[in-house]
Amino acid sequence: MSTKSILKKSSIDFLENYLNNASPTGFESEGQKLWMDYLKPYVDTFITDTYGTAVGVINPEAKYKVVIEGHADEIAWYVNYITDDGLIYVIRNGGSDHQIAPSKRVNIHTKKGIVKGVFGWPAIHTRNRSKEEATRIDNIFIDCGCMTKEEVEKLGVHVGCVITYPDEFMILNNDKFVCRAIDNRMGGFMIAEVARLLHENKKKLPFGLYIVNAVQEEVGLRGAEMITQTIKPNVAIVTDVCHDTTTPMIDKKIEGETKIGKGPVVTYAPAVQNNLRELIIDTAEKNKIPFQRLASSRVTGTDTDAFAYSNGGVASALISLPLRYMHTTVEMVHRDDVENVIKLIYETLLKMENNETFSYFK
Image 1 (cartoon, rainbow, N blue to C red):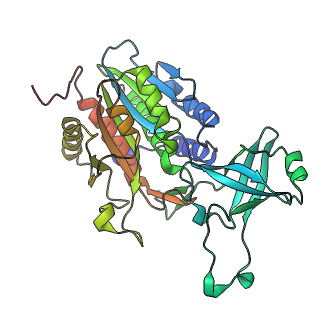
Image 2 (image 1 turned 180 degrees about the horizontal axis):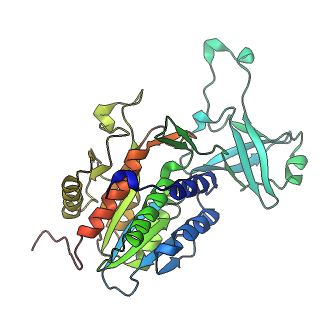
Image 3 (image 1 turned 30 degrees about the vertical axis):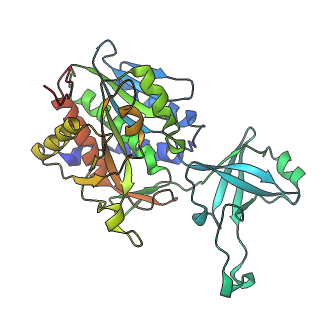
């Protein structure tokens, strides 16, 4: 299968639509509907759960169950406090970066619809340059053009409303995808493309395949924790993003060396089952798919951990997509890496045997 043939124009159109839609942690359902609509022709049935995780299933009757997984949610803010002067102070919903907030436009999600606002910041002329005030969670604020708390509330804004950035998808220099929420709606996109390729290439798997788009990863892997108890899988291959550590101000001695354009990243960590990881690496080598390696101390910080340590232990592995500028509105990945992650998961599934235990003690 040629790498160049993987992403169709219809794939990119879906990706753009999917990324541009806001799906903050705890409020993922509209994005999940878009994802399920796209996936529907390629699966036999769907599972959804109470908190909104969506799962497309191929061969639902099979006893041996393999998960491929990404997470659906993006970081956001909550309205936390409204001043008498109509300014809004926030708390994080996931790992939102206070340093990028000043002068950003925002969408405040209310029952009446989107209310526009901006993160205000004092002008450079008014600041004491000998003692610059750094951005902090307690000094960033949103201005939605109101002069009183009552005006704000009249717009439908109240404590608990979720806030996202409106930044949309673009392609830089032909092969770099840029948007907010690539972490990790790109994962949901890539696993959907795996399902599409299996369908279009008429590949029949000997096991059940569960294409899982989990909610609430950004607040502690919560969606994966829930759905793995529902599915009770035998194997889980998780895809998430990792850092391009070649950009400025990142210490490779601490973060390792991974770079966009150099291929999928295979992680070594306690939660990663070694035999499953070696199957993935063998698959990459045999199919001439470029890949990189990354070591994680103690935890991967991804849904891999939730699957691995569930149900008495599930053979789990992590294939990451290298990304620049994580948790900003200009997250950037390389098209070649996206295609190669899709290809690596696809080819690994074709190589996986039914009822494989991955035991160390055969």
